[in-house]
Image (cartoon, rainbow, N blue to C red; front, side):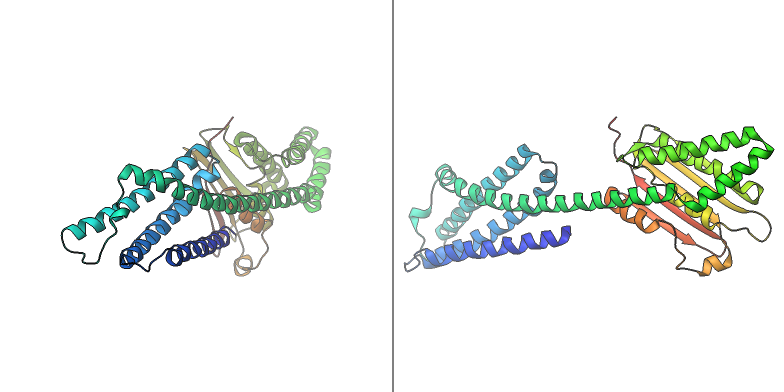
Length: 353
């Protein structure tokens, strides 16, 4: 959507300059001996003004507009306006200098050769008004683009909440856990009680954190560890699970329930290998503003060939990553005959708490 908005702005930009150029070209009285001078002035000034205003709107303003930094916006507009006035002065001086040394033979109007200060005072207000107008237009388009991005992020957040609510009442997972707890109660009440508490923590976390934009990385890891422990007890010796957590800043903020989809998929699609139990390997490492999350699980040949096999919520996660970490993430999914792996890298935002 941003590319469409920029193209729309540029279309209006060039249409407006075409109108301004037409006014300069046709309204000015050119039925004089200075016609050539006026035409050349008009061409040079229009080309230089269009290019500098384009530079202002598409390269100097977008970042400061998004930051809503009014002082930097004003400084850039003023600088370009003064630069345009200086270009006009430089143009007239160049023409008259070339005339004096004999390179230009057509007549020049001496009245149009103004001192620098007088020309700045007469021209700068005009260039300033033009640039303020284009800045307002750019601000309008950028504001609309930000609103659309915000709405898309809100939509993705709502979809994520819905997905999380659906996951937390996953009947298959709930049935298996409760059935396993029922069996454990008859064999080992202490272990059954521990599993029940862990499962309660899982549900509590999903209910409480799904409403938040971010949570502490430490909390997210604790949630994942509880989920893994419950699954390990449920699978018992039929599955080998390894997990490694290397975190430099546990207070770092991340979106809630961002990684659990990958773990759910691993437990859902893991398969025993020919010579023993299936396996899942999870590694999360956070250091110096970078977070890397890798998860691998064994698969069968059938699962490997089934390229369209649905992976719970992966499409939604990819969409969420594009909105929350635009140009700040990479997600690589690899399949082989025996292993399915996901590798996610995030450029984390600075911790604000």
